[in-house]
Amino acid sequence: MIWIQLFMAFFIPSIVGYGGGPASIPLIQNEVVGSYGWYTVERFGEVLAIGNALPGPIATKMAGYIGYEQGGILGALSALFATVAPSLLAMVFLLGLLYKYRHSPRVKQMTLLIRPAICVMLAVLAYQFLASSWQHAGIIHTVLLSVIGYLCLERWKISPPYVIVGALLYGALIIA
Image (cartoon, rainbow, N blue to C red; front, side, top):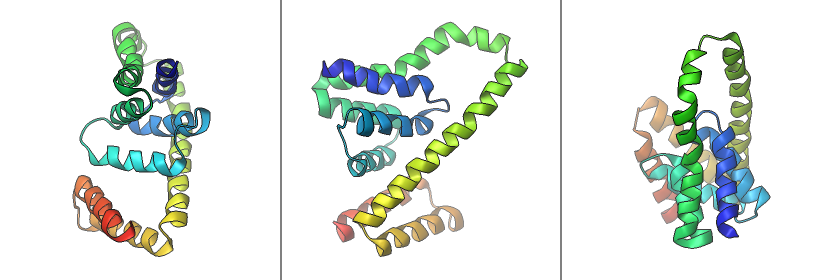
């Protein structure tokens, strides 16, 4: 039964998560935290941070990790397949159709309507992580990491993986 739940928990966000892995993260959080209660928001944030620190698509890394943790190897395979199945099906069956109607006003309108919804969902997810960090790590650590992260990324143009690893080391050595 857990394998079916894992499949559904990742299949639904993969279907409606228009925009790739980052756009489906709030949807995955809703399933993993809200619907099934496998994780808390804090635990989900930790898994997301680890997933961001590793190379590759975030949604598949999270599916593999959460699937393995909840249902072993078959759970990981179920969650991974659920994550890639919608894209695979879309590529196989719908690519020709989308290409044919790519200039259609209805298709363009649909795209314009979906983007703001995903933007709002990402903003809510960021706010939840900020509130969780504020509560658990404290105001000083949260502000310090935010300011240093911003400076590293925007002013000094340090590559994001290095900033993420630095934040993880700071959390492991100073906060924990």
